Amino acid sequence: MSDSIKRKNTSIISVIALLLGLGGVSLGVISLVLPITPLQQEDMRVTGFWFSESSDIFYLTSGSVAKIPNLLIDFTANPGDIVHFLYTGTALLDTSPYLAQPALLQFQFALDGFVFSSGFTNLITPDISGDNLTVPITFAYTSDAISGSQHNLTVQVFSGANNAGVYKSKLLVQTFST
Image (cartoon, rainbow, N blue to C red):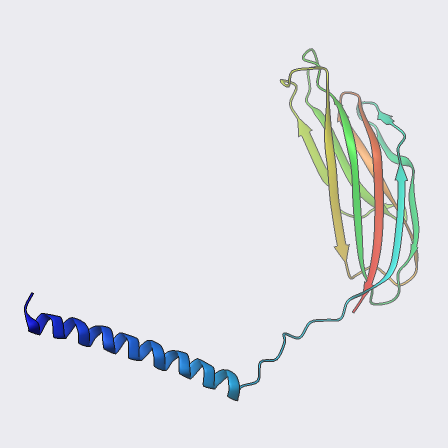
């Protein structure tokens, strides 16, 4: 390799090192001159917490709609609160191969007796081996548009086809203020 090529390579490396060094020093100076402030975040605090559970097995027949028994929360939301609902449970679906229709369960929150959200639907086809299938169910809803007053919350279940059951149900309501 000729001396002129070596000098060019050395010069290029020197220029790159100089630029990197100047960039590092510049960042150091900028961080000293401009104070780093933490991101502004809304101060959220929990204002209420309610919990209900039912370990009973609750069976539904095809085409029925019902609220899960013994699963009800009475809660109070303050004006301006953010309200969070959470449901967890286990569905027991009849998936026998002789059934003509797939197993279908639809879960919805019912606030003050009215269906509140679009809910969660679980559709299982009958080609699953075995007679029963257990499926964990979880769904949640958060809103800042619920009036500040006394409310009650339940979970409504619709069974579209086949016999189905629900058990190990848990319901949580949390309210937050900003």
